[in-house]
Length: 480
Image (tube, rainbow, N blue to C red; front, side):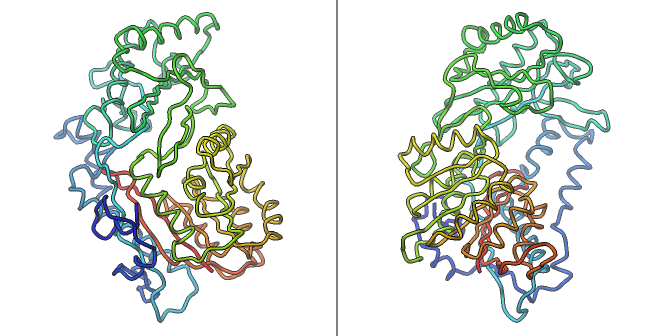
C-alpha cells in the first residue's frame, strides 16, 4: 500500500514514490505556530464526556461497553479520521515547541491519515475477561464496564462490538458455556481462590483460530489439573465447543497477572503450535505469545509506509545499506524491507519472538537478516561500536511499546554519526515517546551524554490501525 492512499482515502490506490507525496498538498507543522497552540494538549473533551456518561442509566449495557472499548463508534468513519488527524497534528505541534529551529519557515508535513482497509471485525487478537455479569453470574465472559477502584465492575458480552470478528465472539461464548459447566470456580481475585481466568483468541486472514486459556492452579495437584485440561480439550474438540473449529488450543498455568513463556510455558493441548499470517507477500509465524499488529490489513499499510520511509524509492542504490530494527518483535518490519537493503539487524527482548523472527526469515528465504536477543539498551551500545567501523549507509527503525525507548537506546542512536535516517513508529506519541523525540532532536547536551548531531523531524504519517477507537499509529521520520 502506497502513502498516496492518504490523499483520497482509498485502499486500492496504485503505488507512487515518496517524492510524489511531498509534492502533494499536506498540512505543514510550522515554527510559526503560536506558543499557545503548540502547548495546548490534544483535545480530549469528547473522552471526558464519554467517561462521565458510561454508567448513565439511560444507556443499555451494550452501549456502555461500546463507549469503553470503541468510543468513536457513533461517528462515521470519515469523522473518526478527522478526530485522529487533528489529534496527531496537535501532538506534532507540541513537538515543534520543544525544538530549536529557524522560525521563519515550515518544518515538516503531517500527511493525511492513512485509513484502515477493513473497519469492522478487524481484530486478529482479543482477550476476554471473566467476572460477574449483569445478572450477577460470576462466570460471565466478556469485557469490563466500571472500575475496580469504584467496585462497580460488570462483565458484558462483546458480541455487538464493531471491531470484534465473529469467530472471536463464538469462542468467547463457548468458553463461557464451558466454565459454567465446570465444577471449578473462576479466579476473579487471586487471594479469594478460583481457577478459570481469561481467554485469548487469535485468528488469521484465512480464519485459522488459536485459543489460549489462562488458569490459576491454586492448590490443585498436577493430576487434578490434568483432569480439567482433558475436560477443556474434550469440550472444544468433541463437545459443544467443536463448532469453533480450533486449530490450536493452549493453556497457561499462571499464578500472576501476566506470565511470560519463560515464567510459565504455554502448553499446547490440541492442534498445531502456530498459525500463520501474510503481510506484503511475506509469511509470518504467530506463536501463542508473539506480538503481531491486531489489524492485518492495516498492518500492510503501516509496514509499507515504514519500508518506504526507511529506504525511499527515490534514493540512489548502493552497497552496504544496513537497516537496524530496534524492538523488532517477530521481524515483520525488517523482513518486509529486506529486498531494499543489504543487511537487517534486529534486536528484541523476548526470546520466543527472536526465535519466531529467525524462523520467519528462513520461511521466506530471506538471507540478509540476523536477530539478537536482549535488552536494546544493553545490546545496542556494543553493536554501535561494531557498526561504526562498517562501510555503507545505516538507517534505524524503532517500534517500541507505549513506554518508549530506554534513554541508553536514544543515546546510542543519537551518538552514532552514521545513522542519517531514523523512523520511529509510536502508538502513543503524546506519551513517553515525546521524551524520546525531544532527546533525538535537542541541542547536544554533554550532561546527558547526548553529544551527536541532532535529528530533525521531516515527515509524519498517521496510520489508522484501530477504527472506532481514538488510537492510531504515528510513523515519524527523523533525518540529519
